[in-house]
Length: 365
Image (cartoon, rainbow, N blue to C red; front, side, top):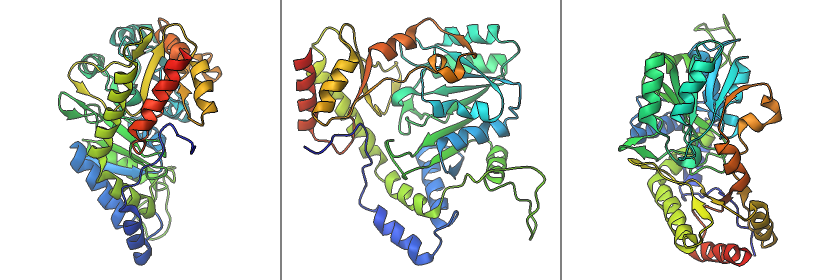
């Protein structure tokens, strides 16, 4: 059988039409009408005042830290239970990460966040909080802590475009936020990201830095260094087509989760990732834990049937790269890593595929 991937791209059908328009105009390099249209579509959908199309969400996080003045020796708080792309920008700025463990929501723990602030060698300047697997974290408590402590809040909403918290889009609560359009996300431009903020000055500064920090001269004049971080017009055309089907994709992701839960919820040792009160996540990936069975056993069985699955994220504080970093943890994310699995959640997969996967899991158990 054809391989069932974890979260493959799913085209809307309009991408090639828009790409043809790009080629006809010959604006295939960075910038062009579709870059503007893509940014405007994200602004309209999320309610963000300003959006900046970039080469990746990680580039967006890097620009956010740079714009907020994070520099060598500063401390930046971050969710430990996440992907490396959420935190690598801290190293780009020669700053020091402080990793904070999860709570029962699987997302960052507000109580451990307060403890991390108290234990920091000096006041952290920012927090990068990840909305894990498309599920929104406890924003009310986290925002209150950041406001009280004078800490900038950056939302890593890479997996949660389309998620809501009290009917407000994820990525619109903090000072700045990023969405990802990598190949495995709900929407894709093959590779790409968006940086959003209510602060126009910050976005304009980020735009300046993302285009090599060129001053406003006819010749190339530079007073500070920048980056080649802007998205191309070709990829933006794909993004415009993808944004037109975002609601359908989120709805299907949630349907897929509901089907997995229907078929597996009667197994006592299985626990699905929760959804906190007042939120509606994207269920980017359907994730669950086994109390007794090794996830590796299930992964191997599925792989033999040409079905991709993966462990949950290995926490950043367990990574060799960050062996010397400060961490405030209680073992929650380590336990989730050891017991958890990500199941195929592509929006183009069939209900029969889901039922077959669940049958293999039940047989293994």
